[in-house]
Length: 184
Image (tube, rainbow, N blue to C red; front, side, top):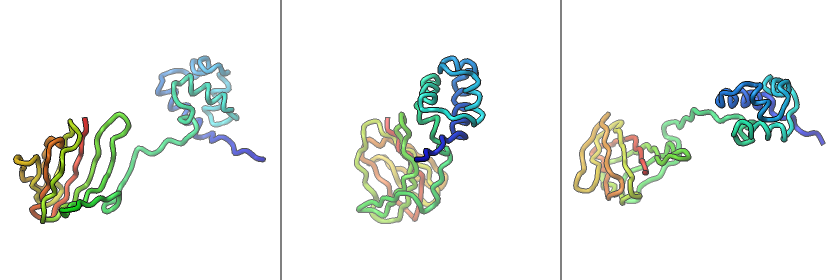
């Protein structure tokens, strides 16, 4: 049975990237991994035939998971076109939220685009303790904020308020806004 060749170009790029990130020379990485410098040089040039053991030793020497050497990195650029993305509608108000991004590991924030239509205000229950909401209005006028402290905001306006108390969103005209929910 024929085994597929290791992804040499991916491995070569990953080795150079991770060695640069670690700030160590080719000679030092070869020493730490117990490899000949010529072997490491060939791998960084995209030649050679690295074994699992060789790649594992390099990962340990660099302090990174083995997978970072063999999987192509995902692009840091992510696009969600207008009208796309996971959309969630409110039950009793004309509010639709599209999740754009969740917090990456170690962070606790979510980003939404909200579309609001005049009608019944959206009454939101308190979120987890320490939650803070940040909103920038793109179009229209919205009344929002904690119950008893709502404010009216319009295009380009920014408002922030505690999200861990009951609060509301009310479209005074068709509107949309970017909402960032920060959880501490």
